[in-house]
Image (cartoon, rainbow, N blue to C red; front, side):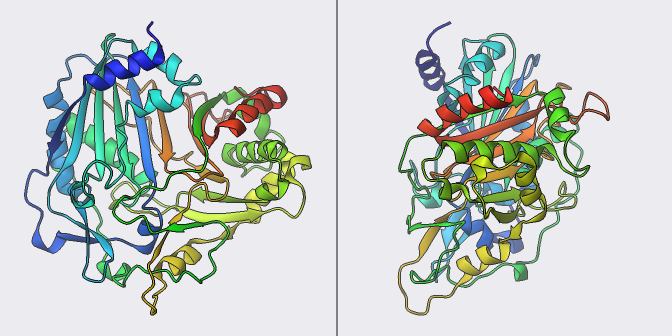
Length: 445
């Protein structure tokens, strides 16, 4: 097998771009999709997902694009573009400009690529399968697509589906629901129910302006206004790595915990403790951010940022704490922060100073609970993914940890909680130490 860089370069050189638009023109009453304060608080972040299929016979580019026309009739904001109102507040103009489709071919097999991607070259290996572009990067902001879908064919007959989804449009659950419905329309193109569209009265139309002297909550990081390039660079080199935690180990971890504790709380506690031991300044890890799905069904909901944000702060040295103590904090001592985020983003600045932007994921070490995300429900020609993973681009320097279902999650019986995939985005030097710490003390690799 060729070197990783060679493989990635070859794959990039064979990319072909096109666009798909809604099957019909979006109705006039839906031409403007107002963005909530929470949407705009997350505008510097991007959801990245990749789904691998071992063998999908006879699937053509046309087969993959055709259901997208119908899907975008339902998800018309995904085909829109960012505009600014007269007072400067961004919104989505639902002008049917479409989503960008990327097609690529690879000389490796799915197994070969996964072996490479799950090693130390995770960043570039997964990025090349889910097109990476920030809003306003290569195109002007008002013509930048909010969604990229990438179809990559492998020499073994397998393929991958990559999605790059602007977080301003919706959270990871919205992205997953979008891609799952695409698969359902492909299998059964009969008309599907319309999505529930929230009333505009629930969304602010006030100028987005944050007073520079307003105290920023410690779980957010204020940055200078990014203008029309919606991306904030890191101050250090960030790397991504995936840990696969098997069902048997999950069950062992949970055996010492209270009945309602999930794998998310235990794995978060272990990583929180481990990183606190690694950090030179233990004070930096006393507070962490948590992010989870809101309760209730979201399958027929409009794309939205409905994740529930909270913080947990320890009044002791985390590195010396028992895992059970940290689980207790995470489970019972959360301070919910959504209202604080809304207040920060909605503060009306009467003085006219230039507004600020914020980093949410990674402003503090952030743990994201995606245990309920249905990433293995996507089907292509009756086949489900052999492996799927999500990550977040644009995370701040403190890093982000995502806990997702593994390929066998929930398939081994009621007494087994199922495999988990833990995707970690951290400064390069911290990640190297974390891998050693987890392998040595917890046998997690």
